[in-house]
Every structure is written in structure tokens, then in C-alpha cells.
Amino acid sequence: MSDNGNSVNIEKSAYHHGDLRAALISHGLRILSERDAESLSLREIARAAGVSATSVYRHFPDKDALMAALASEGLAQLAAAQHAAADAANGGKAGFAATGRAYVRFALANPALFRLIFASPASACAGEAEAMTFLRQNAAATVGRDMDDPATQALVIHSWSLVHGLAMLMLDGQVPVQDALIDAVIADPS
Amino acid sequence: MSDNGNSVNIEKSAYHHGDLRAALISHGLRILSERDAESLSLREIARAAGVSATSVYRHFPDKDALMAALASEGLAQLAAAQHAAADAANGGKAGFAATGRAYVRFALANPALFRLIFASPASACAGEAEAMTFLRQNAAATVGRDMDDPATQALVIHSWSLVHGLAMLMLDGQVPVQDALIDAVIADPS
Image (cartoon, rainbow over all chains, first blue to last red; front, side, top):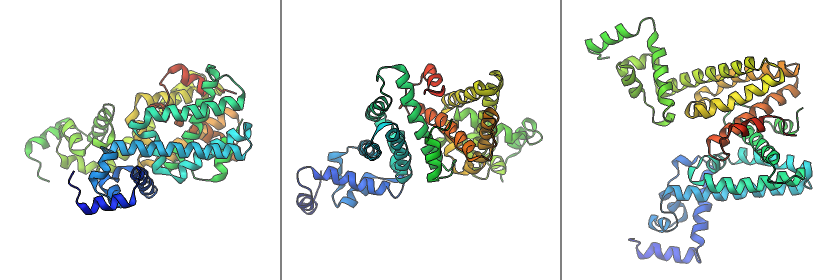
């Protein structure tokens, strides 16, 4: 709580109307595009945004709070990428496969953010609800089934597991990262 | 290199013929069954085995070397669990599904070890070779296909991704841990 006049002034001019929170998240996402979440600190985010650490604490009391916000933003971006892919494929079964490919490609393009979305304990509950809702609706719409049907639930988790596992195995260097392999694995191989 | 006579004496009596390495791995696995790999140290393993840190360094020059050995032992246990499951189901398509269920159940029973097998950069190369060989042979035998066929490769990675993803989503709290759900997801849901 010991901001000097100068840093307060910088914040006032640069961040109106609560934009600082968005700026902090944006800087966090940029840092996550370069390296993983462990080494990221609130102090670094403050420096990147040109504000005091105290100003950051007003929005994110600790690192977990910032990580939860970054995970939530990452999940929104992942969902947007899947929506866009489904739309581009004109929905239906082709659209459903397209959302799967978009999921894996998002993970490969944003490894640290993808890991954060699913590994962050703080985001696990919110994450499940949001991601599950989208996946469920998508799967149910595709197969024309009732969302409360246990078979639909199994299908949704089957599809999610498939793309999540492929993404993790590629990120962890267990399976070669090849675009054609993503297509082949997600297409029904039977 | 400053073992006192007492600790040398303990080692001589307790660990003949290179058994210390096996004992250290065994203590490492026990500790991993209680908590995750990050907090595990060579010093702790030494204490658990009742030997000096110097004695541990003879077998494992650093923590990465111990982690690689634990990951390799974990992979062997995972493969053994899958073999046993396939045998119990008398092989074939039922046996293949059984290996998938065994994979997920192994992950749930050994979360820290499972994560170590797949996340450890030190073990990634050895891990891929061994696990891939088993999965490939298993899948090829089940579907009666040539292992060099690209379609077989896609099928193998499809099956691996499915069970790996389900295991990770359950471990990370994204999907409820339910035995019936494992069965439903691994059974062909189409």
C-alpha cells in the first residue's frame, strides 16, 4: 500500500475502467507462450505491465488467483478455437472431428497454457463445468442424442479422452507431432 | 567419501551383490505411492535405505538418474499389469479392451508414478520405445494387421490416446473417477 505518486500516475493514465486486470492477464498469457507456469511470478507480471506489485495484488491476491484467471481465459480461447473449427466444417460429424483436431492443435500451439488449464487445481472445478458443457452440447448435437443419456456421457468423455490423450502424448514427446497423424488418429480408425 | 565404519558395516550386511540399487528403487516407489516426485530427494532415499548419501550417488549420480530408473520400473509394472489383464481376458478384442482398462486403473492406483513415467524428460525416449512396442504388438495381434501399416499405427495411437486421456482427465479431477465410466468409455461407444 505504499505506491509512490509516480506509479499511481502511470496506472491512472494507462489503465482506465478496470483495464489493468485485462492487461495483467494479457501479459500473463504472453509469458506463458514463452515458458511454463512454474517460473511465472506476480512481480514479473507487474513489471511487464509497468505497475507496482501492490496494484497487481488488488486484482490477484496470490499467484494461484492469477493462474486461475489465466486458465479460465485459456479455456475460453480453447472453446473459441473449437467453435470456429466446427463452424468452418459446417457442423455435423465433420464438425465434431474438426473440434477434436482444433483441441489437439490448440494444445500444441499453447503447451504451457494447455497444461495450466487442466493441471491447475484452482481451475479444475470451473474448468470441468465450462469445458464439459461445450463438449456435451457439441457431442449431443452431433449424434442427435439426449444429453442426460449415459451413452451420450460415455461418448462425450470418449471423444474428450481421445483428443486430450493425443495432445498430452504429443506434448510429452511420446508420439511424434505430425499433422497427418492427428487427422488419422481422430478419424474413426476401425 | 567419508562413510564412517558403522554405515559401511550396515551396507555390507544389508545389501549384497548390488541389491542396494534395487532397494533404493523400492524405497523410491514406496515414497511415490505417498506423494509426488517433486519433493523426493536422494538424501531421503538414502535415509530410508539406511545408507549414506555417498552410497546412493554411486548408483544414481543425481535426482534425474533416480527418476529415470523409477519411471522405467513404473513402465515395466504398467506393462505387466496390461499383460496380466490381457491374459485374464484370454486375449483378442476383449483382451485389448482389458489392457486399456488396466492402463487407466494403474494410473489411478499410482498417480505420482504414472505422471513420472510420461512427464519425465529423462525417460521419454526409453519410455516411448518400450510402451510403444507393447502397445503396437498388442494392437496388431488383436486386429491381425501388419505392424508397419500406417492404419495400424493410427489404431495403436488412437487406443493409447483414449486410455491416456481418460487417465489424465480422471487424475486431474476433470472427469469423475468411476469404475463403470472406465468400462463405458473404453467400450466402443458408436
